[in-house]
Image 1 (cartoon, rainbow, N blue to C red):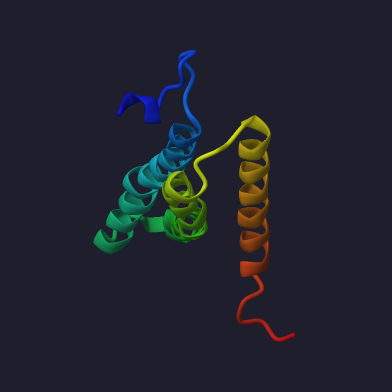
Image 2: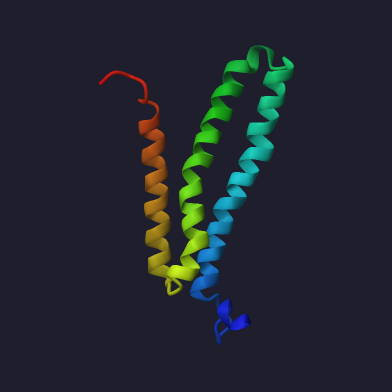
Length: 117
């Protein structure tokens, strides 16, 4: 079973690399929820936010939006080992760059939602 995750020369296999990428995105999402979104919601709902309410809402909303957009690349990273087990550094780099560009584009265009064209 170890041969699925570590190659003969001791490097991570393609499958392990994809799982690691998905795990990285999942860890970022976990951090966002537990240390940014949830504490902001607790302050807002308990009335302790005071003058910081607008800033807390904006920060929590943006972080929540980032989590929504990270869920696609995370899912790809978790499903890729079964469907796209072969990878190399160039393939991984291209996938990460395309994923980050897609997230950036989605965040930039999301601010225009609800505005007339």
